[in-house]
Length: 140
Image 1 (tube, rainbow, N blue to C red):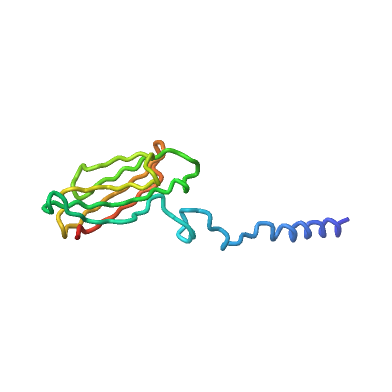
Image 2: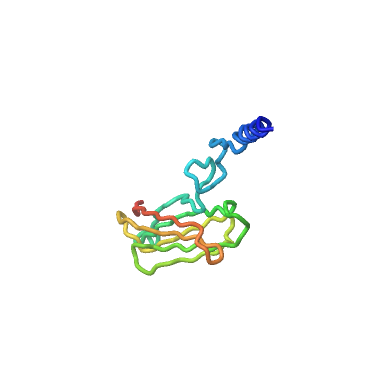
Protein backbone atom coordinates (compact mmCIF):
# COMPACT_ATOMS: atom_id res chain seq x y z
CA UNK A 1 0.00 0.00 0.00
CA UNK A 2 2.87 2.30 0.83
CA UNK A 3 4.42 1.79 -2.63
CA UNK A 4 1.06 2.53 -4.25
CA UNK A 5 0.71 5.86 -2.37
CA UNK A 6 4.30 6.80 -3.18
CA UNK A 7 3.73 6.03 -6.86
CA UNK A 8 0.45 7.97 -6.85
CA UNK A 9 2.13 10.99 -5.23
CA UNK A 10 4.95 10.84 -7.78
CA UNK A 11 2.44 10.60 -10.64
CA UNK A 12 0.55 13.67 -9.36
CA UNK A 13 3.77 15.66 -9.07
CA UNK A 14 4.96 14.71 -12.56
CA UNK A 15 1.56 15.31 -14.18
CA UNK A 16 1.31 18.76 -12.66
CA UNK A 17 4.80 19.93 -13.64
CA UNK A 18 3.97 21.16 -17.14
CA UNK A 19 0.42 22.23 -16.48
CA UNK A 20 1.15 25.95 -16.22
CA UNK A 21 3.94 26.37 -18.77
CA UNK A 22 3.63 29.81 -20.33
CA UNK A 23 5.00 30.68 -23.74
CA UNK A 24 6.41 34.17 -23.14
CA UNK A 25 6.45 34.92 -26.90
CA UNK A 26 2.66 34.58 -27.04
CA UNK A 27 2.06 37.14 -24.30
CA UNK A 28 1.57 40.13 -26.61
CA UNK A 29 -2.00 41.17 -25.92
CA UNK A 30 -1.29 43.74 -23.20
CA UNK A 31 -1.22 47.17 -24.83
CA UNK A 32 0.86 48.51 -21.93
CA UNK A 33 3.78 46.17 -22.78
CA UNK A 34 6.73 47.73 -24.59
CA UNK A 35 6.90 44.62 -26.83
CA UNK A 36 3.24 44.83 -27.91
CA UNK A 37 3.21 44.42 -31.72
CA UNK A 38 0.34 46.83 -32.39
CA UNK A 39 -0.53 50.33 -31.30
CA UNK A 40 0.66 50.69 -27.72
CA UNK A 41 -0.66 54.07 -26.74
CA UNK A 42 -4.10 55.48 -26.22
CA UNK A 43 -2.88 58.76 -27.76
CA UNK A 44 -0.53 59.12 -30.73
CA UNK A 45 0.81 62.32 -32.29
CA UNK A 46 0.38 62.28 -36.05
CA UNK A 47 1.82 65.65 -37.12
CA UNK A 48 3.08 68.98 -35.79
CA UNK A 49 3.14 71.85 -38.29
CA UNK A 50 3.55 75.61 -38.09
CA UNK A 51 1.55 77.83 -40.44
CA UNK A 52 1.35 81.55 -41.01
CA UNK A 53 -1.97 83.39 -40.94
CA UNK A 54 -3.16 87.00 -40.73
CA UNK A 55 -1.45 88.01 -43.99
CA UNK A 56 1.67 86.10 -43.00
CA UNK A 57 2.47 88.14 -39.91
CA UNK A 58 1.19 85.69 -37.29
CA UNK A 59 1.96 82.02 -36.75
CA UNK A 60 0.08 79.03 -35.32
CA UNK A 61 1.26 75.56 -34.43
CA UNK A 62 -1.13 72.69 -35.22
CA UNK A 63 -0.70 69.40 -33.37
CA UNK A 64 -2.72 66.51 -34.81
CA UNK A 65 -3.48 63.70 -32.37
CA UNK A 66 -5.30 60.41 -32.67
CA UNK A 67 -7.02 58.65 -29.81
CA UNK A 68 -7.25 54.84 -29.98
CA UNK A 69 -10.49 53.86 -28.18
CA UNK A 70 -10.17 50.32 -29.58
CA UNK A 71 -7.57 49.80 -26.83
CA UNK A 72 -10.04 50.65 -24.06
CA UNK A 73 -11.24 47.67 -22.02
CA UNK A 74 -14.84 48.48 -23.02
CA UNK A 75 -16.45 50.88 -25.47
CA UNK A 76 -16.71 54.19 -23.64
CA UNK A 77 -17.04 57.89 -24.27
CA UNK A 78 -13.85 59.75 -23.44
CA UNK A 79 -12.50 63.26 -22.99
CA UNK A 80 -9.16 64.62 -24.13
CA UNK A 81 -7.55 67.56 -22.36
CA UNK A 82 -4.69 69.31 -24.11
CA UNK A 83 -2.65 71.56 -21.83
CA UNK A 84 -0.20 73.98 -23.42
CA UNK A 85 2.62 74.11 -20.85
CA UNK A 86 4.62 77.02 -22.28
CA UNK A 87 1.83 79.51 -21.60
CA UNK A 88 0.34 78.87 -18.13
CA UNK A 89 -3.37 78.08 -17.75
CA UNK A 90 -4.00 77.27 -21.40
CA UNK A 91 -6.16 74.15 -21.61
CA UNK A 92 -8.33 72.84 -24.42
CA UNK A 93 -10.97 70.17 -23.88
CA UNK A 94 -12.31 67.80 -26.52
CA UNK A 95 -14.94 65.10 -26.39
CA UNK A 96 -15.11 61.74 -28.15
CA UNK A 97 -17.49 62.78 -30.93
CA UNK A 98 -14.73 63.66 -33.40
CA UNK A 99 -14.74 61.69 -36.68
CA UNK A 100 -11.93 59.14 -36.81
CA UNK A 101 -10.95 60.06 -33.24
CA UNK A 102 -8.57 62.66 -34.71
CA UNK A 103 -8.05 65.99 -32.96
CA UNK A 104 -6.24 69.11 -34.14
CA UNK A 105 -4.92 71.37 -31.39
CA UNK A 106 -4.36 74.91 -32.69
CA UNK A 107 -1.87 77.00 -30.72
CA UNK A 108 -2.07 80.58 -31.95
CA UNK A 109 0.48 83.37 -31.64
CA UNK A 110 3.56 81.16 -31.60
CA UNK A 111 6.99 82.51 -32.42
CA UNK A 112 9.08 80.61 -35.00
CA UNK A 113 12.13 79.04 -33.37
CA UNK A 114 10.44 78.77 -29.96
CA UNK A 115 9.74 75.42 -28.35
CA UNK A 116 6.19 74.76 -27.14
CA UNK A 117 5.31 71.91 -24.83
CA UNK A 118 1.99 70.13 -24.34
CA UNK A 119 0.50 67.55 -22.01
CA UNK A 120 -2.39 65.45 -23.26
CA UNK A 121 -4.64 63.67 -20.76
CA UNK A 122 -7.23 61.11 -21.76
CA UNK A 123 -10.04 60.30 -19.34
CA UNK A 124 -12.86 57.78 -19.47
CA UNK A 125 -15.48 58.78 -16.92
CA UNK A 126 -13.43 60.12 -14.02
CA UNK A 127 -10.47 57.81 -14.62
CA UNK A 128 -7.23 58.94 -16.29
CA UNK A 129 -6.39 56.21 -18.81
CA UNK A 130 -3.59 57.83 -20.80
CA UNK A 131 -1.21 60.73 -20.73
CA UNK A 132 1.43 61.96 -23.15
CA UNK A 133 3.80 64.91 -23.27
CA UNK A 134 5.22 66.53 -26.39
CA UNK A 135 7.58 69.40 -27.06
CA UNK A 136 8.00 70.81 -30.57
CA UNK A 137 9.78 73.84 -32.02
CA UNK A 138 7.60 76.13 -34.12
CA UNK A 139 9.26 76.16 -37.51
CA UNK A 140 8.08 76.92 -41.02
